[in-house]
Length: 366
Image (cartoon, rainbow, N blue to C red; front, side):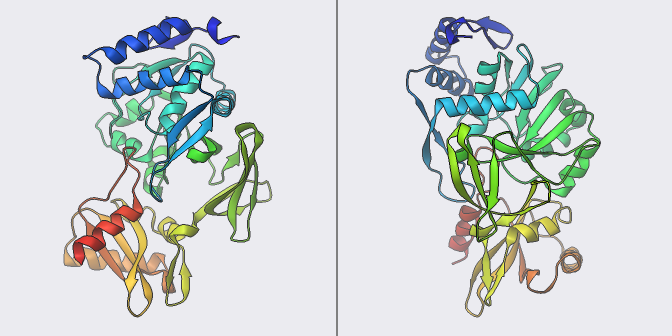
């Protein structure tokens, strides 16, 4: 169907293309429009502009945020793949609870526009407000939002309103995954990055088909380089041999697990240590958010450190934690020290900004 003939649904209200552009223009100029909503209307205007490209910002969780250009046709193709995979139909509801500053929020809007979904809006907060809605067909959240929502007295009920939920942006730790296993809806974890426009692989988190392996989407070809890092080819979204820093393991079916990132590698006393792998082993042991990283050390070059977000525990509690950590890890994997930080640096999606967190710690302790 030609774009001019499409019907777009926003909060249950139907628009043709010209009507939607007019509505967005009015909302942008209105002084009563909240800032977070204005960003959505501005993005829709950008989407319908004659420009072939969209400029998007990377999250900055592993490095300095940067602006990159993505071809709109590639974005459309990514949206279509998601619509097909989840069997989403015109009129199905899609809840946007992520900021449209980043690609994840933008893609929720594009999927709705391309698939004729009824786009529902709620302010992108750490605890998404799902209460105003009845049943929701599809939504996307980051792990922090899911964790915070489940901590609410009726959080499980609210989460289960969403029939199909994708979670991305960062790792789902074992504590959260255990809470999701018996959830009454269907939940997937995504693998992707801004450069791949959206997810290029998914793994089922709950249900009888739950798995620890990611399955690539249709048209996505994967391999490893000499570092055992994932290399992605997906011509339909303009990706050819995209080299990542994610160390992976493949099984005989071509499915993969992410073991950790090479750009986070810590070389301590000449031994290469991979924080991502160590964090997976510690997942579920530490209640608060944590990261494993390296700090400068005169003797070792770098020493492995466990940073935990929150207040320092008592001496006896810290000793118990040490013993638990040593039981989970072996040899050089055991951190040299545990450091509690009041708060990690995060971007607007709640993702931990590792480098900034470490840099700020070093600055404040020098």
